[in-house]
Image (cartoon, rainbow, N blue to C red; front, side, top):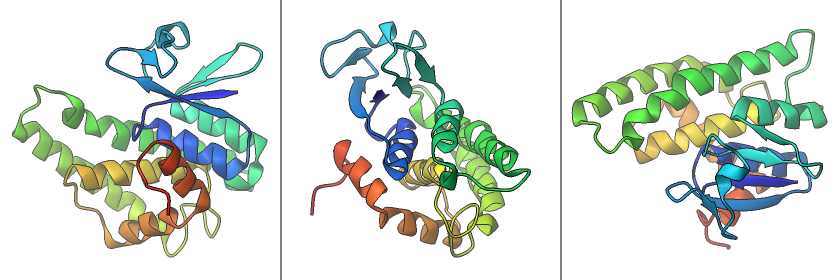
Length: 198
């Protein structure tokens, strides 16, 4: 199994989650500008959409999109998802919010011709939406005391927020700090060249 990723991109969420799950996989870096992998492969042959993440299984099938990949991981390792009758749906609800209301909100920061007005509006919108999640983490994670796949996705959004000057509520700053103490997060950051080995 291979996870196609770009360092620091949204695929970092899947990278972290796979480590949290203890699943065996090979991380493969992709240059999103040239659409080639670190081995020189045409990434569009793996994912015609041309963006990460893409999870390639040994039988040749490929799964794309964060919500799908993170859900697949949670189905393999149920402790990474909330439990109960509505657990699966609460997970999908939260990841859909992160994907559509946070992740997509960063578009002006990745668009070369976006002006400062567009970026300022994006910062305000993202900050407001982070506020809606800030009470959920409390002193733990999104669904209590156990980190799960949705936490990995939220963590990446907090990294992007920090890099782009988005105000982060204190509870989410503390949540991000907690995430960074986790072995899975450290390992993924090291693999992506975002954290130097201790």
